[in-house]
Image (cartoon, rainbow, N blue to C red; front, side, top):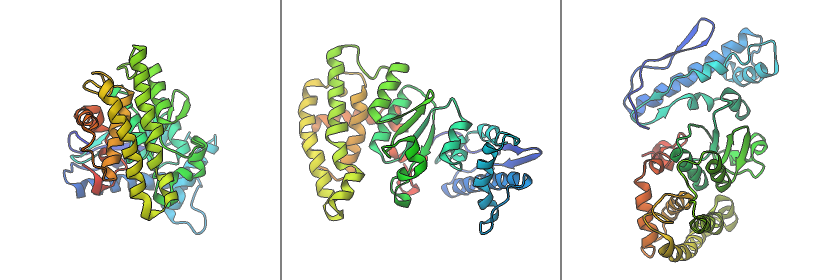
Length: 335
């Protein structure tokens, strides 16, 4: 992320207690150490908070780590306790900037169980996302274009057998897929449904044209990608074809779809997929081209797709929402 260097910051985590989140850091190593210190401090204070209230670790669990989750859960279940004692703590955590990455309340929220995060920010949209998910990227672009502030909860699709299969996440999205967006008191799955909801409730800037013909073209291109290409090279499908066949399968699925898409765009495109304004179709195109690059698809036969994608990636909303700039992007893949 971009912004001023991390500055020395204190935040109150309980009566009479403060945690210093660290002095200025400029290097990757220092920023990692700063985050580890702040996360450890927060966990330790939460554990101490619980121990003071008789919520110590059970037999066989380590002190602060074992007490952390119990403290949070018990504080919700016990009306005689402060409502967590911690919601205001986390909500007051300042934004921390380094030259490499931005850490904010999002870092603190990542420490909490999924079900508690929405309680801490009841009016803040929460996007359940995976950095590499092209469907999640579509939604991140829409949120950026519409200047909607939100929290990210990372759902790692490969760690621990896939965090999307946990009971906690399945309760949020029974399809066990990302993205899912908590907003305005509801949870919405499916990227195009999310984008259309944002368009209907926050219509500036427009992602669906007023003109019915252009709107139909935008939906046609969006559906071609979201229904006709991306699902065929999705992780769940690739697992079924076997490790040795995954690359060939994905390449064939993408090239088949791109052959049709290139032909369609030659008649609909201006600067972008449909005319000269960014639309929902473009939110689908750029992530799919990234998938094509990842699967080593030759884009030479697709000059229109390549030209539009180059124009899109120059836009700020596509830049900040890119998979290489997300909170859960592994260090070796960060830009």
